[in-house]
Image (cartoon, rainbow, N blue to C red; front, side):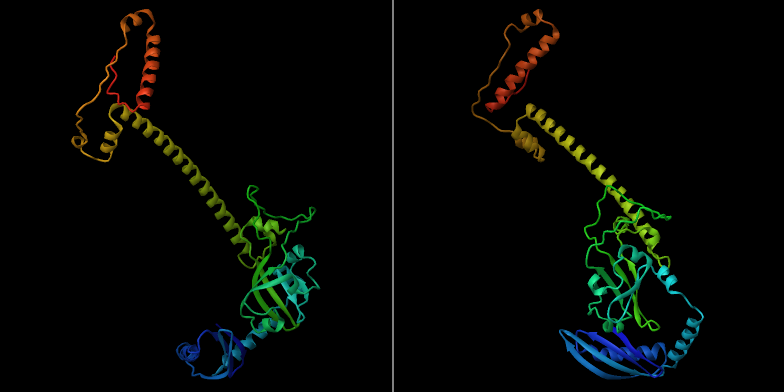
Length: 356
């Protein structure tokens, strides 16, 4: 990783930190090649400082080369800035989540939207309200001043649960899903850039809230209109919500299909059991299982030296049928054969067939 510390028309101070001492020579060759190939300039690189902190090597290089283009660019930017005045109130409206704090880390002012959800932050130390998640440096003014080219991520120490005043009338677009609960993490996360305001002698944090969905936005007391207009925060929020709705709909459809499939599998199991029961009534269970595995019918044949066979008959069946109705005959036979089948299964006897 690298960052720039100082730059003028003759040199540039470059700060590097890496894991291996061998990387020092690699970085020097890389910078010389970049200067020669892209900018057609010769560069002299000198080692100013080197130290090892924990398992990381921290190195400071001085890059000497013709850098007059830097002076010309600085003059151009200065002339443009003089023709673009902007008031503080407009700045806080453009960046509704900005935070302005001094060298003592005390918050002097902040954006309009952040003022709604954290009204007590002004005149308090920012370190008592926010933790610095990224980069992994000390949350101090001097440290931040040397790392303004990094992206800073802040998270509130305490959960943020703010309700919007009921009489506040604005043209908001709110989309919520009452069936879904709020996220477990109620903290407010901000991601943005640190800019040192030389006229104020203060640091301005231009942050943007990191909201996963509209439910998180509503939980913190914010609406779509509170997000910045200069970036894609609103578009990303609505696009993410639309995608979430589509994914939820697709998930519901898949769950319904899964339930139908489970019901079909259950019915299939029931039909297979009924088929097996009918098959076992026609041939012995051992033979049926061997045939189901693909064994040849001839191989399933067995020979027994002696067997006992019972031939049963309903005595005076014809006379009984002449005295009762056909439905009574069917009911009588069904009850009789059901009892007979139960007894044969209980005693392990195979019934060859039923003849009427």
